[in-house]
Image (tube, rainbow, N blue to C red; front, top):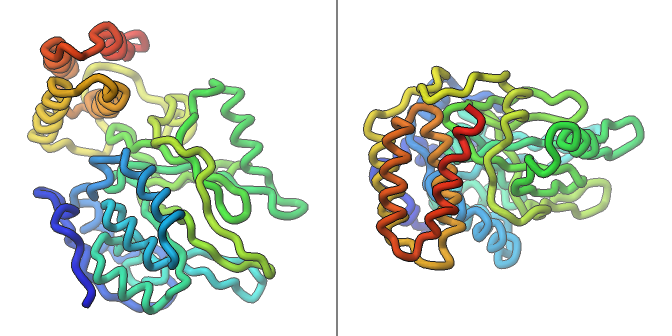
Length: 342
């Protein structure tokens, strides 16, 4: 008998209001306004709160799973929502990897194991789509490959763009597509919401309203079996400022709240800060790289108005100083980094 998602994935405060749909419609990507509104109002999936589990999930899906359905279920167990996507070529031989769910589209992505089993029982060869945006804690640059004569070399153009701006600044987790394109996965910044604009000569941005195919997702094209794989096996990193400037325009840096489209829950910043400080007070030697990464992630949210920046710095430093194993100078330097650019 199919089982529902483990209770551990449904943490308190994490809504799964869109996890029980059983649609079987024809091709349609946009989703109804009802599903979209529900998606936008719902809390993040577990992976957004624990993004370091992404590496483990992708490795396990590629190495341990024998079928697409098994891989999709594994992602769900790690708190990563999935949707089944088309794997069949059209009459021109091209494969359009659209969601197979009809009404609701990508906004029906779920971690519910019973629903996922139904989908992949119906479409065993379906590719594994993962939505991007706030609820999943990441967004992607989708750089196209030069598949045939006349195609744009999006991957080459991307690396040229990085070199022109700040070499090394855009290093992050990357997945390779079956045709050698690249998906660069960046941490979501609630202060700078990213949609799905095109990047001329490179490809597309996959943010809110977008999705990417996750490994392994094998499929057949022109008589060859292709699949998605890991190109850069590291955790998603924050995107550099110059990239945000290109995508959504520049914004002034200040200690004030970002006045973008996201409205912070007053309790969110305090709860997140309390949890972070407890982690800093108890972190042991050998775990400070991860602790520093979590602090940097929260620093993005502070910059976006989640909490008063001065008070947050004080509480974080107090927590660090109370831990005898903490590398105080390293942490203090890291917390002071943002002030150099203000």
